[in-house]
Amino acid sequence: MVGYDDRRRAQIAAMADPDRLELLALILGSDTEVTAAGLAGPGGDGDRFAAHLAVMAQVGLLIVEGERYRPSADALARFGGSAVGHTAVPAAGVDPGDHGRLLRRIADDLAQEYAHHFAPETIAEFVMDSYQLLASRATVRVHLPALTARFAAERLTALVQAADADHDFRRDVLFVCVRNAGRSQIAAALMRSVAGDRLRVRTAGSLPAARVDPVVRSELVRRGVAGLTEFPRPLTSEVVRASGVVVTMGCGDACPVVPGRRYVDWQVADPVGRPAGEVRRIVEDISTRVQGLVRELDVC
Image 1 (cartoon, rainbow, N blue to C red):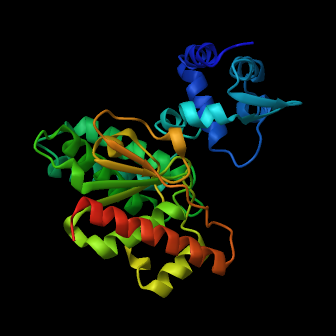
Image 2: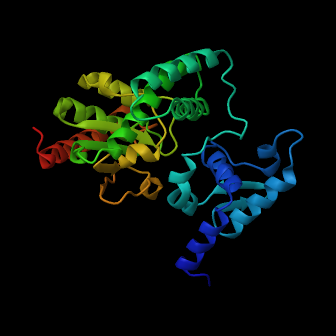
Image 3: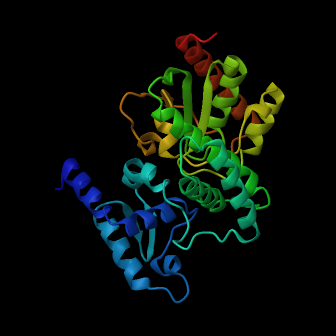
């Protein structure tokens, strides 16, 4: 029998190939099981994809059912945080089309704002990477440039803060759940309503959805805090490094671990898809936890 440590070493060795990490990002981001032919696309090299999938299945990262593959628990727990740093679309990426001009303008504006920290080329890469991460799951693309500008600016700000030796990381809280459409959004909205600008609150998802769950939003509207939510965004390493307290709410080990940060795991039921009464009880549970954390951080 292969022991835990042996399996872990085999999985890490298998994922040293960047093509496999890209494939795993695709599989983790898919709502359905995948096949080698489906990943390769028309005219693609299905045999090459099949070989990569077979290696990942052999080390326990994928579960095989006939010709279909789905991720194992190890895949999300061990490599989810790394996979979300890759574009969850084929290597060619999403063609920005008419958005290209707007993205160049966003990059130019951010290059001026962050001129003392990053080269223009670095910022341009961040803008395009942020666009690709958001576009890979977008159902409506008309607002993508505006969302990209916000997302890229947040990531760059996080990098600046992470590099600042004088930054007080204790005041930065990150809430993470899988889809960033329910639990993490609830927690962030409630903490912002209690702590105001005394805390910097961020949210992210290991596999973000396209929008906040409608029933969750309705409950937050009822409480008067819906305006304190934000659009679901991918979990990236720089926001973890810029946070002193990382609260996971269902994503577990998919969150990258940064030394010197405090990690808290809240075992909270997922409200997405549940009826309004159950969502209300979940919000009450999260509200109690948030108030306790705010008191603990002594910012009231």
